[in-house]
Length: 421
Ligand code: UD1
Image (cartoon, rainbow, N blue to C red; front, side):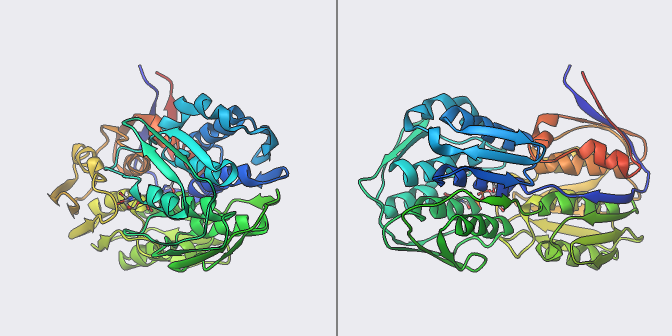
């Protein structure tokens, strides 16, 4: 039998929670270390599956690593191109493994890898990554399972993304940072982790400007050095606790965050009637009733993040009236709606990318599944808010992206446990 999370719900959460470094920033900073000439020290590294898989990949590629708590020292000098075939198993598990292609193209002028894995939330093509590599001068070959590329030299290029892509923006920065001349990325992603990875590369000696706007300029440099860099706080984990406070009518201070990164969520929580107070590096959310219905459309940053729409779906189940989510980034992000219906939610899909939630008095405990990473966090919040006992299955999804989720909720007063099967 598989492991599960068992929750006896209905308890208002109360207290403080401190947020770890961001998964999606860490997954770009780890491959950035491949580009350094000297050892790199990464602080505030979250202890989650996806990061741990990445650390294993770096080790198998030949890096020397020392990990103490949330600090990882990476000496990349032993990394060899020939080792790429040793990471096939890990690379297929994790979508962000494709950043190794960008970093390898930059360092070795070639790369080879299986096509990436990740959450089952839609097609998730990588055409924009390939277009960026090709624009810089790479010759790319793709078979059913593998992608390989090679370049005689990398030259700066003018690259326009459509649609906006976080992954392609980061990969293009990694690949072009040591190219000859200037690269311009247009319609670039503006997410906080894009900015964090640019900040890290700049501290290493890169010349990147405009990160956080939709045009990023990268003037190629000859070399990058290892530095001490602390990963930006995780806005998605922070948002998850904020929504949990609202869903359980609780009072939570979410610490060690950058409140500006959460403005779109803060606005929606307030619109629903909750009390949200921003401090310098923390946010307090007090859940209020009645919850008012809202509509959300997921958008690239600074719009409402697709990674927080599933937890918001839980909250919408408890609002008085009809709410709606329009998902405009990924096409398969509503698998969780069926799980909420098992708990008594009145929710359905109007179209493939629009979900409608008619508020109910309360949710009832049920046996439900984490259908992907962010849906997993939503299922836990649903269990915390529901009356009775909820069992959440398929934990491997949740453990890819949340540090100490069960322990943190227990410290906030929840009756929650991870039970081994
Ligand atoms: C990243 C995040 C993920 C988040 C998402 C959107 C990481 C490791 N993951 O995913 O948590 O949900 O941003 O904020 O950082 N697209 C293409 N061609 C491409 C690449 C993307 O058409 O080559 C499309 C995608 O199908 C999607 C849209 O662009 O519809 C945005 O995807 P993208 O921003 O690339 O998401 P990821 O980087 O995969």
